[in-house]
Length: 143
Image (cartoon, rainbow, N blue to C red; front, side):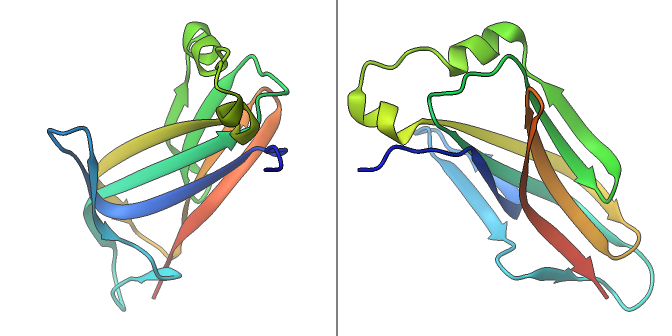
């Protein structure tokens, strides 16, 4: 198996994210289409919006900082900086050779409530590892 060479991030946008008792996560109302239809006039209010991100990284190069930003257009909805000890834990050595070739995975779940979408546009997630910016797929809104 060819080792992982590049960092990437992918998102699932959904109506809700539920943590189950057995450790599983339930995704409710996955937005699998290219866009979300807005009403012909006025704003759209999403009672909840779940964002599940999967960041995949090769073991090298290592990084010092990890920032996650969820944006609505150019507006920052949520910004999260992992503390240095969490960044170090993400990069802790794994003795399993198969996992080393597959790299590391970080799973992130964000749940927003009462999100107002006033105009057509996009919601997008980006991850910043040191100075490298990873852009995830977007959720588009149109009339």
